[in-house]
Amino acid sequence: MRPMRHLFTLALAGGVAAGFSLHVSAQQTIKIGELNSYKAQPAFLDPYKKGWEMAIEEINAKGGVLGKKLEVISRDDGANPGEAVRAAEEGRSLPPLPEEVPMIKDAGDYAGTYTAADGRRFVVSDDGGQLALAYKGQKVVLQPRGTDSFFVNHPDFTLFDLHFGRDKGKVVEAFYGGEWFTNERYVGLRQFPSPPQWAGYAGHYRAAPGNFRIVLRKGKLWLIAPEDDEMTLAPMPGGYFALAFEGRPARERISFDTPVHGKTLRAPLSGVAYYRTFTP
View 1 (spheres, one colour):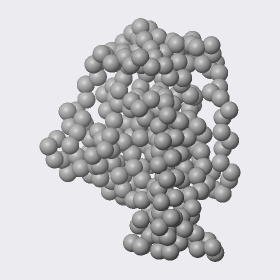
View 2 (tube, rainbow, N blue to C red; view 1 turned 180 degrees about the horizontal axis):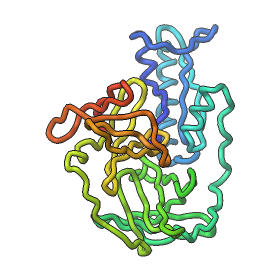
View 3 (spheres, rainbow, N blue to C red; view 1 turned 45 degrees about the vertical axis):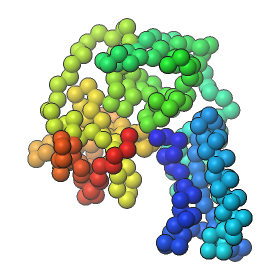
View 4 (cartoon, one colour; view 1 turned 180 degrees about the vertical axis):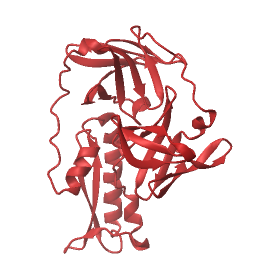
């Protein structure tokens, strides 16, 4: 759910009396930080912003919270919430907003029809140096997020970025979370067996430090962080998995336990217990 990923919601305002710590200025104003991708996703976030602005006005008109007015300090993250959060933590200015979607070098490399095993499909085309995705009768311009990685401003693509895979330099496949799509240039295996219990590990896990999602893709388990960093899970003795980022093994390890109806409810990661949450 990328639109809400780094949002400090107005629900905090209602929780002040319960012990939430918010910044209170000398003028007795409660300041709430809010970060979102307004410019990248106006169709979804403009109505949302109007909603919280109306809520703030209504709360302040009734005397505020504990006698203090509320003030929301809102910033646009330029569709790059991970970098925006890091900038805020380090005291740097937020990244500048892009004026327009940049041109894509070799945009034609990505052109093709991409189809999943269940028949779901989308079409990518070179639209004058930009990439356009045709899906369910809509056209969406893809926004670059990294090498062969793009943000898709569509409700069906809000959880993850869309990644493309190459074979001998040619783009032949696309990945969205655990979903795998191939185009007409793909030649290779289409079945990737894995231990049956691995399917029960997939899901969304949360703890106080944050959250992540586990997906099963092409016979491998992947951990996807909110900033869309992807790490493979390499099996280890004792039911553990080592996390590997960009092909380099990491020191962290993860395991899965407490199965209920075929799905594990707990995922200890480097000494912290994360628990399954029943959200997408």
